[in-house]
Length: 93
Image 1 (cartoon, rainbow, N blue to C red):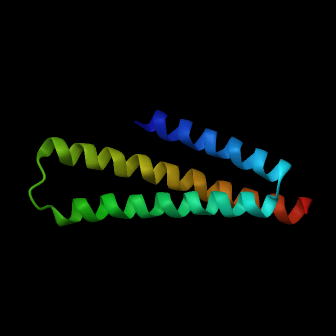
Image 2: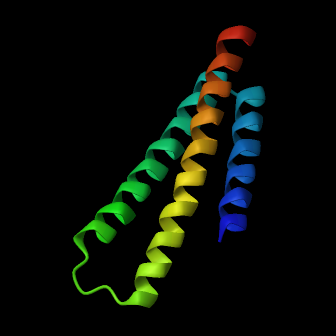
Image 3: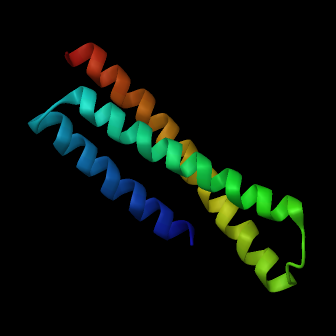
């Protein structure tokens, strides 16, 4: 499952670089920021579902924990990507 998240990150990062080079670096920062927000929301959603603990089977709990952990990893990657894109925007203009 982690491999899927890393592949998603690489594809979105490539799209952001292409967007920044061809169109606008500010748009690339916003694009990555929106992805970061969506990932943050997904992480919170899985965490809330696990905290509610209302009738989750052990198999489902394992899936939710794996998904939450994958999103935690993806959240870190996108957080760093947003900071790098912001620095790219400020330094390169």
